[in-house]
Length: 163
Image 1 (cartoon, rainbow, N blue to C red):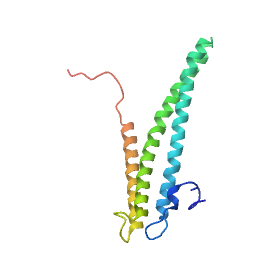
Image 2: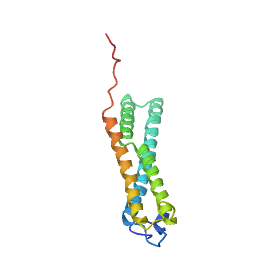
Image 3: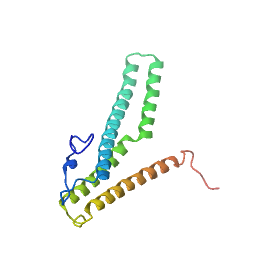
Image 4: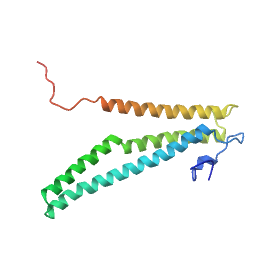
């Protein structure tokens, strides 16, 4: 197992700083979390899309096969539930956002490992840990803003007219 519990196959876990030092533990933990989170979100996205496609396609197939109206009605309700869950959990958006942050953290790790600016000074590991936390904090702030704006969205209704 490379570098710690559950990090099998993470190429960045083997990198060393310009002074030969190991990746700071906080950076290792944060990067591992994003690796796992990205994978879970990707899986959730693909599964939700596949379920939605299968349920949607089954409605006309059941109707053509002469299934009872109750069966097609239940399938239609399941499509609505699946679409609602997709919107609620936003697996696709989370996958993209996690992948973007992970790539940014990996870019910082590579810069740290090669000793390129700004990691060419004596406090390279501390700077890497700080920048990693900044990236994670910015992503968490974006996530919170997305959730706040979604919960404050106006309800659809008739247009308001002046008069």
